[in-house]
Length: 215
Image (cartoon, rainbow, N blue to C red; front, side):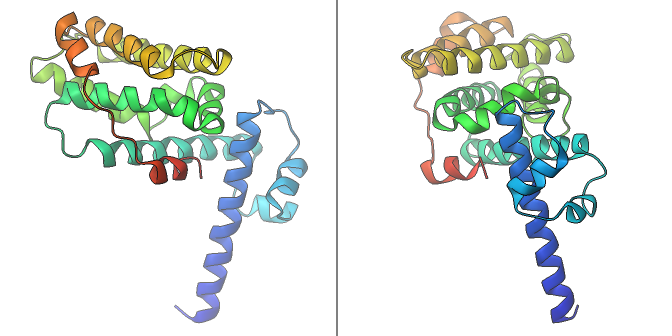
């Protein structure tokens, strides 16, 4: 590939990244009805550039949510890669995401305002949670007969938790997240003693990576 072509590809990638970042900001602010012109102005790109990447505002918002979810999913993978117990992987992931509602409020609002996309997306949290639930069930740690129903429970709990933590800034984040995680683990078939033991283990949050999940 020529140097000119390389520069063009980099410019296209930067433009797409700027549009997705702008889309995430608008989602976080709940401004889903904003005109495309306003989004392109926020991204500091021309209107014509928008249509080089997306056919509609809705397509941009889907890409923005998917990008946020995938970044968050990669972050969770990086922190749970050394764990062997799928129940612990699930518990650690939920506890980390719960804490990020306070550490990354803009990202949190993207997740909250994405609604059904959180469970329907093929990227990020949903496929990883479904994977861990299935693995924990196979290992005899969880008792789950309907993974889709379990995912609805987990997703609804996560969204409710996020809203609670953002609406009540004085609430103890770690204690609230861990108590919610215990309840979910019990609902998935773990004993309460085992659930509390998993949620008493340290949570490792890489501050630098955590900051990157919102970009």
